[in-house]
Image 1: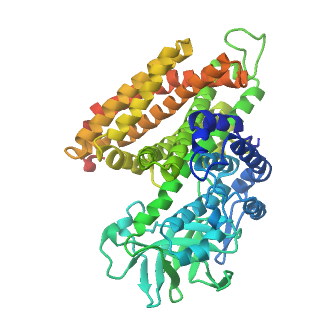
Image 2: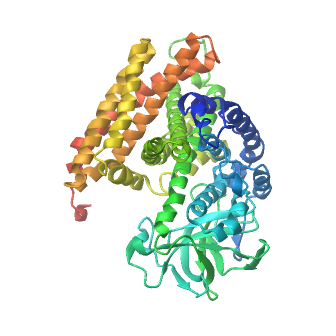
Image 3: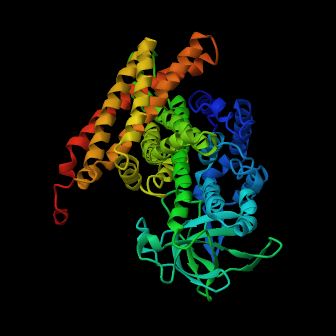
Length: 597
């Protein structure tokens, strides 16, 4: 089956949870209210449902191919990307000064989810270009901005991130690619980079590689890494692509999933050195690359939500169509569609509630990003920046781990047919498997959450987040409906669990780091679970208020209430054992010596 963008749920989150009215009150976003959001999302849905989604299966079965240094993408991708660029979608949330539309991330995030839900392999090219744009806006010289930004923002050219090398995966201190100054402000770059998404393709006339490398004499480790622009084609004075630079794609990887996305091995400098242009200052490359990485990590979280949504839609359709066995309650005289069976409903509700909870979390995080960058009050900007930075590892880590559970359940709902490729359920499962790995594994997100986001401020931000969730639990309790009280109880228990875990992390991060970091991934999963449940609790309150006022789509709002209650009673209840593993289980993680494995 194809893909239907969940526009109604996205707009609910944007209006009632992210607070689009408050976002539209920020300087520069005055025209970006709910009406604009609805118009943009509806047009985005039409494009992705009609143009991009139909290419998803084709990309899996006829992926990108490499021959003699050139990559040919799946038939249809090149034309779809042309339409994507002409529609202005690459520049949706980038500055008007460089050819973008200047819309808030709150709207852009929903559009990014749609693109990934339609076709994750296709969406990876714009995702990496977004990161390159952010890095150049933040740290690029005026000359680099003039040369590259408008071409990237308009989608005429695409961008890549070049971090990983054969010996340097997550440990970038081991980067060996070198850059030699040429005396005229340019550099010659030499080295090999691997796992470069869309490092070579045929969809745009130039590719702008952002490359981490070392300048001779630089300090050891990550403090000696610089960032360079290394274009596939050198740029002529009139802005057109010129001579081919000394960078070649020597192969592409054969992968478990996202097969249509070419993952390249790039060789720089085999014919005398690739021309490179320094971004910012020497030895500050990792700092600049983190700008790209944070944007990409959030975007990968959206990928998890997107593929989960698509797997859920397909599972629901199959459960409605597949007739098998008589219902256990005898409500039908003979065999019925499997959606009548309680355990199938449990699986579908798990898929639905996890997906909607993570979507709500990501939408709220996007609104915090907008406030952090555009609010006129410095104190408010700082508060929102802290909240957004705390959310990024949760959006990335929890949403991608969630996608594995949801896409696996999607296969399970299909039964034996889920294991057969022709149904398409397996593709979602395979595509999702990369998400907890690239742009920083779940463990790296968890280390960031423990070290930078919790221990560094003595858990102040973590406890402030829990306090906000607890206020929602109080509001739910005061609302008094059976559904609200049920969610209030589980949300309050989740707050207790998270607060205890956060205090344990803060207390032990320095004195007993093995104890703190042994529970880092459970802590991330606990935090993501809490925040998603908190947002669904807020959604329940709003849905019941609208129902009480006789406003909105009653069926949709009743479903929001039911989904929030299910999440509380089946997903939030996982927080207590997660807390126990963190606070009481650290010793057993390291109890076995390395040579005993």
